[in-house]
Image (tube, rainbow over all chains, first blue to last red; front, side, top):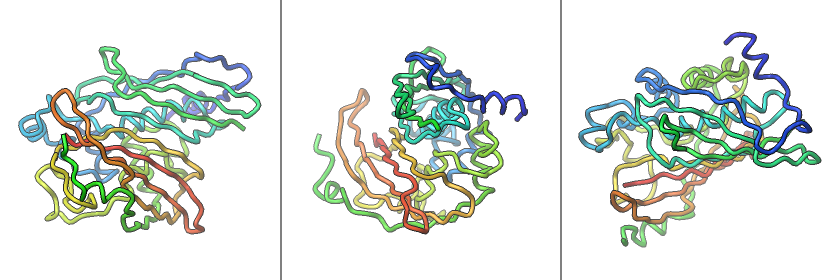
Length: 147
Length: 151
């Protein structure tokens, strides 16, 4: 990754200047056969719906290879981690896989500030993974503590 | 619906055997590459992203132990579910300490809830598992609540 991008990621969030509704940067995620292989190898997940198209469509009845729910959870967590940068610590986060997403879909991660507690140096975030139709397929939340 | 038996419900609260894992920098680097992490600390393997722990404390099963769907027969403790098609349902993570290469972690999982719902395409069984991860000093590192859905 370029130094410029890391500088951008490490840009401090100034909690006193935040307002509820402040949007986090959005990022597009396009899973491929290769990226899903890499992910499922890394987490040692051998469930066939993530790499065997014939089995996935003909036996389990999905329209295509399924993008892992936890991978979407990771992308969602990155929205919070990258926004929080070096000064913030994501102490908790959660998400719910509401609708399956499939290979070929372009997903978008993002979110916004939902609550700010300046004395406690704490910010609550509402997060999402959306599909190309704009549907939130994976909603989530995160709590960030700042130094 | 009545798909869950008393045997299923009796598995709630029973802890599975703990699993010890030594955290490897190279494994963090692989995970970071696969998930397109953007922070140097993850890409270089200095620290693990929080979702790195997904599946980290599941038993490693022999190839001969795999079901047709690729999920290990022995992966899930307790009685078998009557619905076999498994999907991820969601996760809640509370992180207390960073995970770094060289850490020796102990993960203990247990089922905390099982319930049924009627989905648009048929019955669903939700299984909720907790995972508590401690370090070699016995300090709590991370807690996870994970839901899987059988349909």
